[in-house]
Amino acid sequence: MEFKIAWCITGAGHFLQETFDVFLKLVKSNKVEVTTFLSCAGEEVARVYGVLDKLDKISSGRYYQEIILERDQGKGFPMAGRLVRGQYLALVISPATANTVAKMACGIADTLVTSAFAQAQKGDVPAYIMPTDYKAGIVMTKLPAIIDNGICVGCDNCLPLEKCPNNAIRIVGKPTIDLMQCRGCKVCVGLCPYDAIIFGKEIKNRVRKLDEENVRKISLLEGVIILKHPSEIYDAVSSLDVT
Image (cartoon, rainbow, N blue to C red; front, side):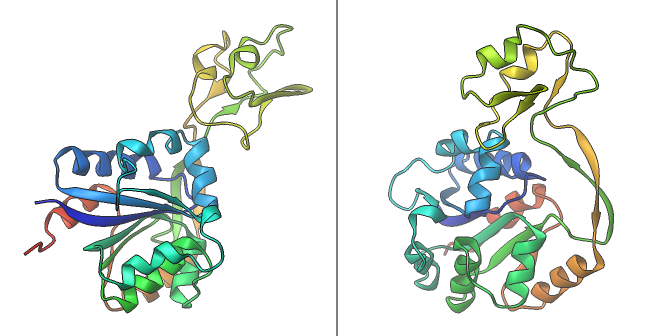
């Protein structure tokens, strides 16, 4: 039996691809119908990490399987009202940025995602939240496509620049990627003869004590379940009572 899930994407690239893979598995197993909600920051990040153009594999566009963008919703976020009406069996926010978690902890609902969370709380819809900043300390995160200027030799004829389908590479002394144009297609990665373009480079990121405390605060809210990794989403959704 299929049932409806709301998936919210915030402005975090960390664990975004992994979350996408889990939802794709859920959809292919015919367990769920998914509506995808994206905040403005979520739309930008999904684009540069190459997820935005694949979302129709999760949400086909049919009724209650739409891709809903904050920029199309105005200030009232009317589509978030579906949560208070009990149209979804669960809300999943993954990955959830520290900013989104902080707003939810303070009861602020000024984005499509935080509004959806507030409506879910009012409608007694369980919310599964996978924070990027779960525990204070050092974590590893992955970057979108970048050009390493220490490797780039500044070729007179830059093949990645010429072949980029989105005109996302600019010359600023040396080539650089304009992330406001990039769609994460990775075409450029294989074109540089010096391997100067890297997608998914890992860097260290520090999770603040403040962020950890905000996760603890929302974990105390009724109906909120905190997940540590996207892999937990599959079992959480699969175990929902659909009777």
